[in-house]
Image (cartoon, rainbow over all chains, first blue to last red; front, side, top):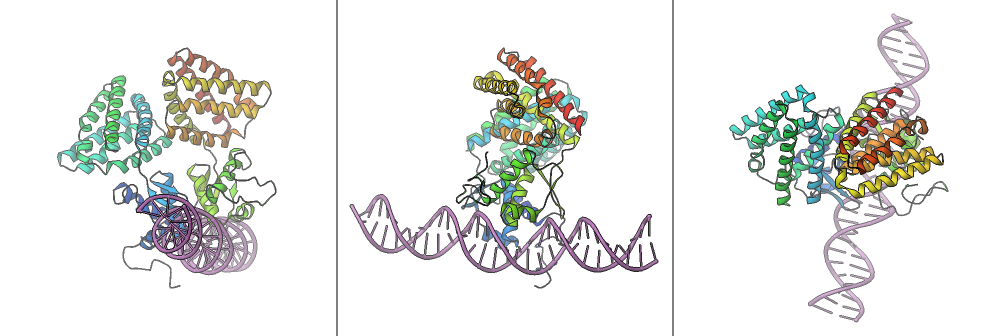
Length: 224
Length: 224
DNA sequence: CTTATCAAATTGTTCAACAATCCTTAGATT
DNA sequence: AATCTAAGGATTGTTGAACAATTTGATAAG
């Protein structure tokens, strides 16, 4: 056909020839829509619809679906299509169980990682600044990053990606709630947790973290 | 044999009705070959070859590749094909870091799960029986199952699947070694670990487990 | 011996067609 | 009227072919 290069439309449709695969490009778009709330949980993603909109072939789109399915953002029912994942209370409980394990282990290793403490301080400062300026979505992002850093204290690349996926899953619920009401209560707790860690009071930090996670879990379970 | 659908004892038979998709069927076959050593690490999986052998289309095969890539059993290099994963020393170290985290947390929760202890006893008995009869591959399988049960003490479905995937990855290295030399030293250690857990001596059990994992890590790192 | 160039082989992507399955609706039966 | 059954339409599952893009290996030139 007519020159399948970077033509098609002059507009913004597709960034040049990206180095990553087309499927990952499509997956990135869908991932963003899901985690930012454009695609609500339970919504069905029809192939016809999306192939037309994203201008990719069915095969490529299905590969993107597969990608997001592995991240547990989409659910695939055989012969029935893919749906934006709906987290059950059991899912939320399970996710928090894993978080207790990962973050608890991270806190217990905090004393061996001074660079990690510095990163935590930075994230806390970011959160405070965003809160002072009323940018609550940014506060939420900083809160998640805080816990991501705690997970990274385990010093394992695999744990980091696990944690990132868990938080992406949680965003399925987060964006249905008010970011201020959700994250504001945890700002001072995060700060105190950092203080305890810096003071070398490991067991106290561990207890505080556990309390934080329990509270967050209760809040989320109350909504579903 | 946990292959889905009717066996292909007569060659080309493809199951009439598979409950799962064809891609998952193909992935299951490849997964088994990889974890059982039929496909050695570093080996390239050519599309032509496998589409002919498995009698699936290229698209379906690539979907299966993608699936196994998520599980880190295959490595995908752009425009160069897929290869059976080769674990680097860094990979082994990272995997054992995760195992220390998961299994350590499991042991710490052992006292809340009497059913878990019973399962551990059963697996230890299996391993002893297999060792007495010289079935060393079975001993290895029981050893892995022992640690899978320890991970399950965390009471999280997600942790269970994480652990299963980690052990599948480790099998990439295991099946290049002698199962007897690899697993025999751990038989009495596992038994002792169980004894400590049953006696409620949590901290001692935790220390013993850490020692076991450190030792296993050293053995594997010595081979690559 | 090194570099440049070309041809073959393999992967990346798309398309169109058909099969299998699900869902809806209309009709028949009670 | 309610329930069951049987088309039919719509959507997904799978395939094969086609072409583009990239790598690989061989060959030729400097």
